Image (cartoon, rainbow, N blue to C red):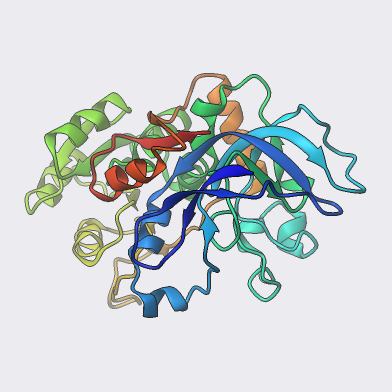
Length: 348
């Protein structure tokens, strides 16, 4: 038997439970988990009503954790591409592995995953917040090397997701450009680092508290302002006559989306990264000419390798608070209540 942090009943807090140690089937790999990350996506799922949760169809009980790293512990029949003892990171948004998108490593955009019942760990099947986890295919295991698992685990989502979002706008983030990041949380603080590492842009951060604004400056923002009614004017003063190159929204609720579009100009990328749904008027007569609305999802397998390489050279890191597996419910409480700085990491 082993301990696992599971979502057991809709609307209730997750529980630490004793469950059987999973056995890898043919082609599968079992990991001894060394670290797992807690994400707002988990909090979002656990905040849904029973009717809303039914739309996702995630089976319960379900072990949480779509950010996971570990050491290969056991191999299913036929597995030859990894070996016991390998330190690896789990690539979460897994696809069929055979379609055009998947063969390019873009499994986050696999068109067949849903119909085949393939879901990310912790978001439809058992995840990493346990002493052991089973991974369905060794191709989604990325070598971790000498990276510290506690420091690296957040890179699998909190690093990968903003990296994918920023890469999609790199063509607009040249010298003299100005970019805005709204929401300096687990993903937003990494986005600030990535923008400084990958672009020459002037970076402005917006958030709701002095603590978050100080965190933004520590994470690389040139300027940090409260995301209130004065924010658009403050941003405009920095940008001058040049339209914003991009706005990265890591909150994605209606008031934030409205503010983002109010700041957009010709050829601005408005990138909605947060897990939300908003309404915006789009079209030639409804938005600035040349502006784009994007809703990127997670990132690709090659991009995860690139993010890990950025971490190896010290150009990006995830600010973490560490919890034991027994304290996993408290990690999610703090996440839900907005008490965390950066990312919560659960160590079995």
